[in-house]
Length: 220
Image 1: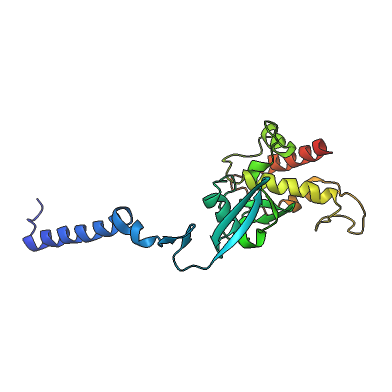
Image 2: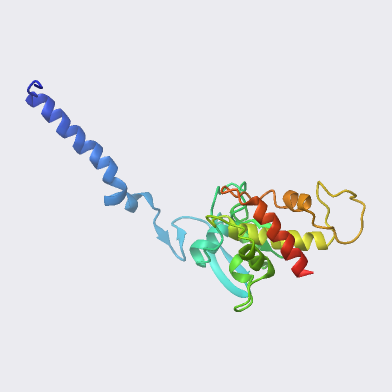
């Protein structure tokens, strides 16, 4: 039989529960109000230095007033509701946020929106033409080049640029002859090297390589 609990012990447990429960509930009950900065103007935190940014995204023009520190990734997702571009590591290491900037693939999480002003941005939402998927998108579907799908938008954008780069003659670390002129053949080794900045945590790399290879042939 358990010994009777003293009033002091009971009071201690009750007070401890109230205090810890208050901390746990703070983000829900009232913490969000104080944790989030007050907004001023067109979505920028109060006191922040704002800048006017003109973005051309998927063929549409946008004029935005942004905190000068806003990344292209956050501008796309939070301001333009283009959530196909994913935020993964937010450190430029996983490639989930890859978009095309004037035809070049970039990590949107490392690119300030202000530096993209006036450039042509293409996200995964802008690759299809009407109801017709881009050849890379079609190949990813046909080859089942994804599992959870979180990295897929970045993989697809990267693959589009990968194919274009090889066709333009841009060599990679595994190109047999870097002095060669003209298009580079996208062998499996070339594809793996050129796509190495895009991580698939599900491990669908075999199907991704096959999808890029098929898309390259279809594109040609």
